[in-house]
Length: 265
Ligand SMILES: [Zn+2]
Image (tube, rainbow, N blue to C red; front, side, top):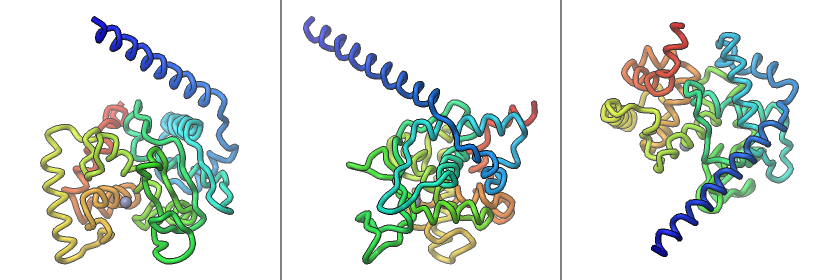
């Protein structure tokens, strides 16, 4: 009996906390104003946005607005966070989940923006400063670390197949099911999981044995493979479809299947 009461009280507290969290998020969204140049920045640097129709552009703008309202972007050291950085980070966050109208990242509150690359000890001077972006864990859980230089390069060179922001947010998507393992279970219907794992292992083996046009960093492990080929998918879809049709079809299934009804409407 006492146990039942305790469970009931705990459930009430949890419900209260969830309600307060939701109210706080709603207020943040209501109060936030997108940078005035957001639309022109998207027009100039984000082909994904440019290719959307009018109605979907509005949706995209709302979604980057809501993302920025609920995710703080803080500078590290003497980095100056500019509108361009805010818009690029939000665009890179929304592009991989744009086909999922109800999806929000529930696993991030803050982005730490470093001026350039940093080390795995989060240092910007000294040895081993080769990290462009990272999804934090431990004390940095719910935090993403990004290099400002890499953020800008990713969008200013939109078709080189590399985009650090998209890379890191696909890791967050992968993490949403509890493990960063290259299998984003929320994106894949059950029947595609085995084909995806097979394709991933086949490609990684080929990359390790022979190398191909996929960034070799993708052969590090399954998680990096998923993030690297996602960058490729969003930046050079036609080339990916031509060179890796099976891989392309599976990524298309993950990232765009929910858009199909809209496309034919
Ligand atoms: Zn990575």
